[in-house]
Structure formats: structure tokens, C-alpha cells
Amino acid sequence: MKLLTYEVDGRRKIGIWNREETWLYPLDSFGIEYRTMEEVIEGISESEIQLLNHMAKKDPDMVRGAAPVGEARILAPILSPGQDVICLGINYMAHAEESARYKKEDFGGERPYAVYFSKRVNRCVATGEGIPAHASLVDSLDYEAELAVIIGKDAFGVSKEDARKYVFGYSVVNDVSARNVQSRHKQWYFGKSLDGFFPMGPCIVTAEEIPYPPRLTIRSYVNGELRQDSSTELLIFDIDHVISELSQGMTLKAGTIISMGTPAGVGMGFNPPRFLKAGDQVLCEIEHIGKIVNPIV
Image (cartoon, rainbow, N blue to C red; front, side):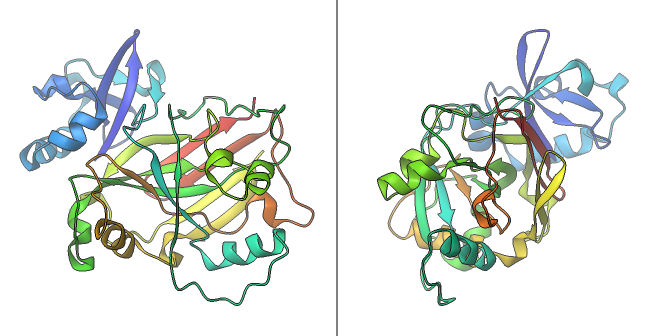
């Protein structure tokens, strides 16, 4: 099932797409009362998930409050994360190589440990919404299509074998990055965390919809030109590893977003680099989840 946050006639709703993805069905029309996606993630029961999967097959004239997709404004599924997003750096081998070239560093092809960093996200950007260029601060704005994993229940001391039980679902994100700010400060937090630097959506696909582990095509386009074209099967450190490793020393709270890293093809990977500018349009998509499209403003 695909869960969305959206607005119709100025009213915010949590709902699902019908199977054809042409109509939106609000959860409250089925007697399921959650005000935010975070409440859904923390509280939804297996029986409610089964009900929603069943109702997604119904015709819209059988669902009270059903709205055509064209009459709704799709918002980011999680509007304001309760804590910083956990991100993985250089988690595809080809991206590790292009990153080393950009930084003029030697790369021996070995990645014994995962690279983690956090990203401040005050508000997630919806598909169709602008990504601010921050031109007074940023001269090397970059895109990074990534698979987001959303944790469904508090996780601590989880084994690799049990990690999948803690996955609520998946979404598409763009880990927008200011490369000059990253380089200047010798770390990634500031250059990754400017306002508007986390487009997310268009939905959350619940875990039972996608065979595990997810082996999904991931792509990005800039102004219609294919830039990234890879598969989540090529992650160096997979979901099982990440959830297990992190949870050995910290509790991953329900609703935690983990952004799994980006494949090769980002702007800094070209020679010369091909960074974003105002007026560009970036599309990030992942098979079976959907796509987000954002202009640079």
C-alpha cells in the first residue's frame, strides 16, 4: 500500500492511493483516525494494514471522501521529522570512486566500515515544490537520489536476521548537497542541512509491498537528462547491516528516516562537474515507489 499526506480544499489528510494511483482515499473514511504520518507509523495495526490494502482495490464511488489525484496537493509523507535524518555516505562503490576523483584522493576500493552522518531537516520538501539555490552561500549545488528506509518500531540491539521486522516502509528522497560548504567545513552536516535540502515522497510504500531486500532501479534526471541509473541491489552496506549496526549502540525510534546513500552520476562526478542552477529541474525516482520532481529556485 502507498500512504500519502495531502491537502484537499485546504484540509490536510492522511490517505492511500487506489491501485491505479488515480484517486486518494482518506484513512478516516475507513474509521482509521490518525492525524499525522508519524502517528500512522507508530500506531497502525496489522489488521488496519490489511483493511487498507483491501480498500485500495475499491472503486472511488464506494469510498467516502475519495478525491481525484488532480484535485489534491501531494505533500511530503512525513512533513517534519522528529529527529535528524540518518544518512549513509558513499554507499555505492561507483559513487565512492567518483567522490574520490572530485576530492583528488586515492581510492583503493575497500570500504570496511559504513560512513554515517546526520542531516537536519526542519521541513521535508514535497514533489513539485522548489529547492532553494541559496545562491549567496552555495556555488556547487548537487542532487543525490536515494532510497529512504522508515523505521516502524523502536529498535535496539537488533540482529541482522531480525532487521527487516523493523522496517515500516520506503520512500524516495533527494539528499541535496552544497559541495563547497561541505569542503569548507571539512564535514557534511552544514552542507547537507540547509533549508529545503530534503525533498521526499511522493508516498511511503509499506514494507509488505516490496520483496525484501529491495532490489529496485534508482534513477535521477536533470532537465530530462538521465544522470543516475543504478539499483539498490548495489548498496555496499545493506539495510540489515545498517539497522543492526546502529541499533547496537543507539535506539532507532519509530519514524526514524534512514537515507541509504546515492549511486554514481551526481553533479560532482562529471569532468568538469555539472552542478545545479536556478531554473533546473531534478527528478528522482525509484521503481515501485514513485518519483519526486523539484525545480531549483
